[in-house]
Length: 100
Length: 233
Image (cartoon, rainbow over all chains, first blue to last red):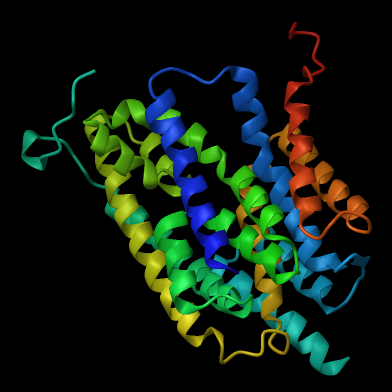
């Protein structure tokens, strides 16, 4: 995590916000553009979940992290408070590592 | 459009704004502590973690960047993935801008606080005055909790063995909590499945971090007309 990453990301994130709020403002994005942008978070967040659970470098692998993911999905599905979801998922993975 | 007067003595009822704004703030607080811990463990420092939360101030993007860096990804893929994730804030800006009229300086300042939570809280209010109030109250709550939480996480972060306590799973657990409310429509579900498949399928041969950027391509399915007889695209 370099300062370059921090600052480029800060500037980029700010410019995206200003672009929508100030530059586009009262006008509208073309509906197709809006529809595509609206779907990006679902695709990207699911990709991040896969990367953080089932990959190590370039390898695909199933390990103790999968147990934590299952707990997180169950917790979110059962509407467990977010703080508890994170704590339970981490604990599940930590315990799995300790006993395996 | 009239600039709404924000003073309560004008007879506008502002009930039901502060409570929900604080509740959102508490949820964000937990994400923020996790972010601080994970950021310093991914080679960040307390100042870098704080700069991210003070300046970037859009949680999913921050988590995404740290997650890619932590996995050994390149700076470019970390930044591009995070900015793709942050592109939705541009849409939010268009949605809330009509309720926050003012000088250029005012609107540029408001833009920095235009994220999931402030947009959601603003759009559900039923009057212009309440929308404006909800935006700023939520902005204050989220900005405060997000940065205090980041500071706490970053300060204690180095004392944790993230592997031992399973803290690396805070990434996917946080992402599950973030994505769940988005999967309400058929297309969003398909985008989620598609993004997951693209990521896993490209991980063996693309540079680390690039599969995350690639997964965004799946969002183009938004352009496929929905298959309904009643709907002629």
